[in-house]
Length: 193
Image 1 (cartoon, rainbow, N blue to C red):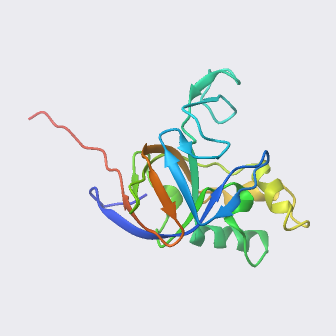
Image 2: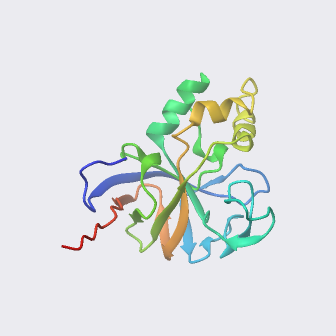
């Protein structure tokens, strides 16, 4: 995590943006994406609620309706390069693993704590909810570009560096080339003296 940072800001750049307008994990590249309070307009993960899945905490039964804490997903180019190296390929497009946007310049992006906020120039504010755990479904997306890679190779190659998921705090637009300010969440300590 980010030691010795007190509500500090990190600065990065949006490299690419994607919309999940297909039934599979693959995302389609765009010049910009629109966020409203339900998520990304036109993305299959948009909505205030979702059906609980294997990533929702037990004892919530699979299929039960829960708050949608996965309205967006993001990765860092630096971590994607490590994943590509781990898989033995030269380059890995973020849209293959279902990311909505890819950032550059934010060290240890996947380790940002819950509650951290991403501020974009065209009003969008996003809040980190969870680390996005690597899965074989994303591995299937990679296999569409690299037939030699098995879906089960991806989780091992991406553990701890798969990116983040979260919710929309304020509507707005995110464009490739935008500068993003990341406010790293630090819990406040209250002491009774």
